Image 1 (cartoon, rainbow, N blue to C red):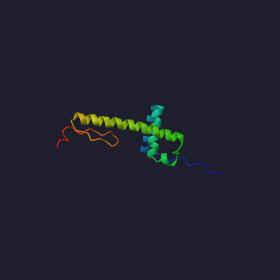
Image 2: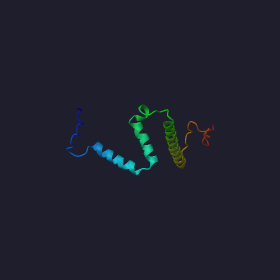
Image 3: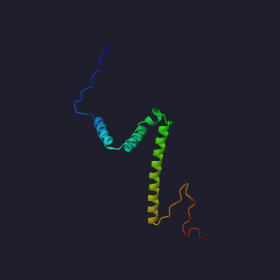
Image 4: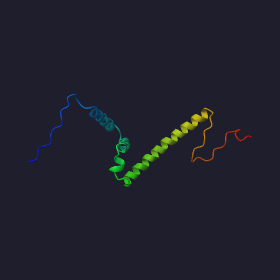
Length: 113
């Protein structure tokens, strides 16, 4: 007859640091809304390599999730770009045009011989 699985070894000094982090993480996730949990899951699964090896990357759900994440990231980066541009204009510094921007006018006096 098959033997039952051995019980886990007793913890002499209490839970491990990993177990404590896991418990904290679980509490945080339980307090978040579904959208926040989904985004955290997306990031964590990418970090630990699950996005590319265990989940089908060409499924409709995965592509939709990636598109939503990319749109969110674009919004974040555009906001940061505006912040940097406004900071540069407040300081009186000319901001160089970025790739993809329309041709920026030259600073006044720069074209004078």
